[in-house]
Length: 280
Image: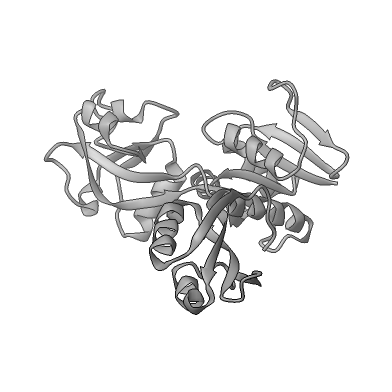
């Protein structure tokens, strides 16, 4: 039976659970439950702190897990990323007092506060910068400079508004572009292959739609340039030999632009349907 670690709280928890349900797996009924057995799919789910998941998977106690790439790298676990999952995106940056720090090299001999000490230490070491210390904090990192605990911080940045309110400005390079990932102790985990296929199918279903349209046969090649699909459009004859019916997968974000272009070309009866599951 496959043993899977799932975040039990935090920004990744709700989306991870919803994704597993979309992939056909059962789910715990009570959010306080820390263990659930999906007998039909032969999977045991363990609901754990996101920060601990890489450790459990890396030790071999669990087969696979869903966590953040940032948490995986910070854990120094032997677990490996086997698939990005398309949610939970975040960007890590350095920030310091306005006008005082402008480049990564300025952190030499400085105290840097962060919730990800290994991640930050590794990044600085790779770039030849030796700080005075890397101070671990579990939250409210942006307050560290004002309270005299650190000279700079390294934290997740969205708009930067929270940092500005604390009198800080972003500087230096991006430390990491993080996202939710599926991890395993072995990069090519045969036991996790079905889970990977199912989760990939969920991502495809979220990112693509099916588009059906009728187009004059003489315009088919131009229509296929507008919407080439994953491999190639499906083309079927109509009763009128001058027309064909076409079905194609289109990125969801491009749906209306593609519909407009096809209509301008001469296609008609353009219909869009959601995809509920997929295997490519």
